[in-house]
Length: 128
Image 1 (spheres, helix red, strand yellow):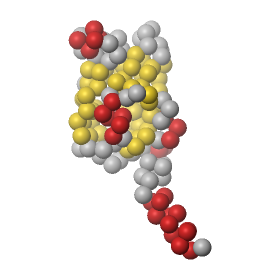
Image 2 (tube, one colour):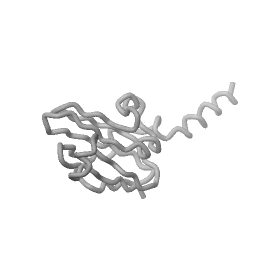
Image 3 (cartoon, one colour):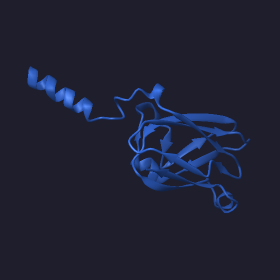
């Protein structure tokens, strides 16, 4: 029985996102409007849990599109259903918070249509 218990402990130790105390992770606001994403550069520390609080203060739905970023992170279990096809969709006048552990890299972020991207609905995520 001891080998089974030891194997279970090793599995749990190897799952960083599952074992996190998410309430202690720092939280940063990300504003998504019809014309911009603020901040333009989101800086995060690799391997450290974080929460991003997305706010859509417009009367239109928006999406925070970052396929490479969302593929690379370890999302908190209950947040996995919120991110679909590399995007977080935000209904009008809403907010969403997701928690995750990021991996190093530089990731492009954009809005949900070409017109919005052209007028500035873009950002970058830098994880070091």
